Length: 129
Image (cartoon, rainbow, N blue to C red):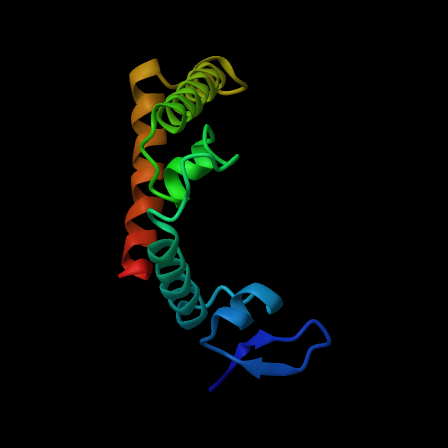
């Protein structure tokens, strides 16, 4: 299938609806996103539980998420990443409440951020399923 919005970087149409078109040609149409999500889900499923105890990738948030590792080192790395994200959220809230507009209260800023993230997450889940 060819979608007029799905073009090769030379302007030529490419087959739409594949993970390859998503990755190699940057198409973000629904069919390409769904295909990429399905591929990523299958790749994650193959990785879970495959790391040996002495694998050097332990102790990373990436290993916690992508390999499903729940060893102490990977849990600690994921917790640290979460703490970093909390700091970023706090800075963003500060920016929204004291920035150029400064019209939002702290609670309103947090609610706006959470609403935006939840909207993104729900859209992503729809593509992954």
